[in-house]
Image (cartoon, rainbow, N blue to C red; front, top):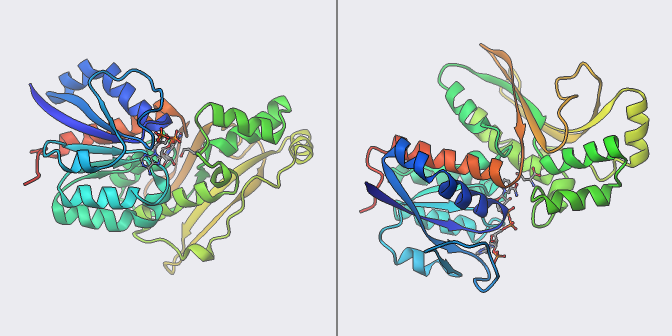
Length: 328
Ligand code: NAP
Ligand code: HSE
């Protein structure tokens, strides 16, 4: 059986999720694709850190060992922040290596450039994991594109915020303690400020806007509020009135073609489709010309949901590339 050699950038919650799924589902992946997938190198900041066992994998802290290896077919990117992630993926694409990323901070800003670059070099870029964790929103919108037009997208795009709001309401857990739980469970960002300030949901919304509408609004025109001003008393008072706080991101293309977005906590009642979406779940409601409303709900963060989205992209790439080794 032919071999596919892959590298993973980052071995935190997401990188480990990818590694585990590739190992745990090795047999099924071989059967489905006809390839033996081998993780050969993993990039981290500190290669001396104690980590879960990874037989045969070399831990590295610079990309040189990857660039000098002519046989890496696919790179999974799960590190933090815009740089050096953008430069690494750009270089990989130029070297005709397929890439799969979970890095929304980088992709919201540089995704369009990377996709264009990839088209030029005839390689694939998978980014399902950047938005809504295990919910296949990128694939769904991509599939809808040729036959339908999207009017709006709205939903819960940050698992940490929804987890905190749920814990406050259901169990009376204070904000800080609920955030700490979300961090322990691997839902929150390395710096959780982006989760609770609304910035993370905003970036995901911009990724969806680029995909659904072919463009993003001016970032500074989109009002963004997080859940930091939602107090326990507010949540309790709302619950008494049978209302719930949800952190909702929304993007609309109006009839004149103007794109407007907003990200903010919103009070909703039992009739609202997002009322029952609790915990780390994300939910996205897409309004299209032909379908009307389509709602996707599922786990928005965490090791396996995110790892699964990345491995799903990888399998899609293998299936799509008649010749996976397209590098010269
Ligand atoms: P994490 O647990 O903090 O792990 C980050 C990993 O990346 C660590 O292994 C770290 O190395 C490595 N790293 C960070 N910066 C690096 C750099 N400049 N060079 C080399 N290695 C670097 O983060 P995570 O939760 O796995 O998230 C990874 C990415 O996926 C982020 O972009 C995040 O926004 C995105 N994401 C996360 C989730 C989630 O549920 N957690 C879901 C979707 C997307 P050390 O181990 O040596 O520190
Ligand atoms: N921190 C993010 C969240 C991870 O809580 O939604 C998934 O993108």
